[in-house]
Image (cartoon, rainbow, N blue to C red; front, side, top):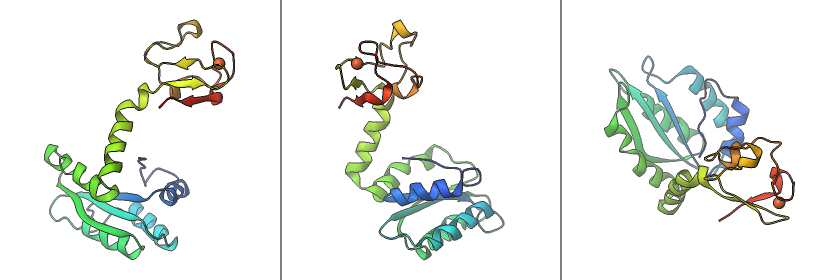
Length: 179
Ligand code: FE
């Protein structure tokens, strides 16, 4: 799962990820009975690209009236997305009870199995072990690599680019994730 701030991120980069994804969730606060202009502009771009066979969900917050979610859902439909009914609408700032609706939304969006996979990935993402292709050495984030001044608890992804296998000396890109 990837998260982007539409107002700040490169719009083309977000679209590349939308292209690669099966489902997206778009959020916006309600501003003057509408959505944020940055989101509106991005939605117009999204429509032009005519994506097909992708699911979408909307979420947002509001003060007095909460149109943003409905507007987002309609625009996503207009852009060719299969929009699910599940959504998250919070009044003022999101609170615990609003977050409680997230698992149901994710399941509706990507299916039960995928949702579970996503959870597992999140939990072991930083603790994944990687094995060196040529020599078989396994990098274990729990231990780190004290000989190269890598502290225990350093995820493989966070190793410096010039880090290399302490046994055979090949670079990081020769390593593969251990399943
Ligand atoms: Fe090696």
